[in-house]
Amino acid sequence: MDKFNAMQLFVRVAETGSFAAVAYQLGVDRSVVTRQVSALEKQLGTKLMTRSTRSLTLTTAGAAYLEKCRVILNMVDAAESSLAEEKAVPRGRVRLGLPLSFGLQRLMPLLLDFAQKHPQIELVMDFSDRRSKLIEEGIDLSIRITNRLEPSDIVRKLGESRLITVASPQYLAEHGKPRRPSDLAHHAGLLYSLDFQADTWAYQHKDGTTTRVNVRPRLAANNGEALMEATAQGLGISRQPDFIAKPYLDQGLVSPVLTGFASEPLGIYAVLPSNRYVPHRISVLIEFLAKALTE
Image (cartoon, one colour):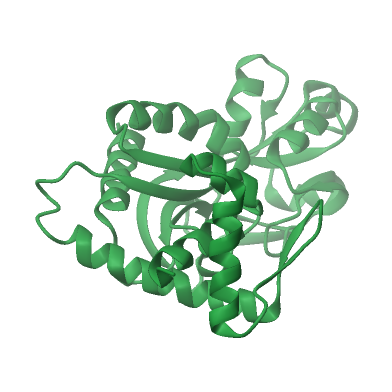
């Protein structure tokens, strides 16, 4: 048994959740993949996966082994890639964690363009607004839009997004237009539930002072598009990134409020799982996105 090859197969099976899918990707029979993983388990003397006809689940030992395999494979990849990589055609797989709305609206066209320019790079995309655990989930690069980074985050800033406070004309006609941040206390708030302290909105005055307002929640969701629909239907006031709000503003479905008060901008970041060596293919992708998002 080639242990290195078996480790690669084990990681692929764990990430896809399917022996058949890996066999299809490699163009071999399913039994070839199954035998390799079984031989690895036999040599290790422990069960790495539990299989059934419908699902595949890592054991506790399997989850721990998976993380170590990823570290080892990354080190091998780094050693190989570092040899004259600037002259080499970037190649290999990149697992991307992408925010849902921004990923579909803004990043997807860019990534398709990137894929056309770099046919030797395989992009595997995971769209979700939740904060991914990069190392545990095998994510090579995550794009996050936030104003609250963790101290341990390894990031490259790609750009910024403005927060816009909006309400529908119908809502404003019925409930009045807030003139200052403190007025929000008397309005229904539509909150982005993944935000830290989602019911507290901060606004900056022209003199540099900041007002924090507790917003009365009427509805909460973990997706900005859902909140914009609720806003357009007149259910309350929401505060949304410009890339989500723009189509609704352009169609007149919502109107901006509190335009004289600035909200802290959201940073658009490329987040890496660690400060270890960054493979050439990932560096190329980060540079591509940094340039595209600032044009």
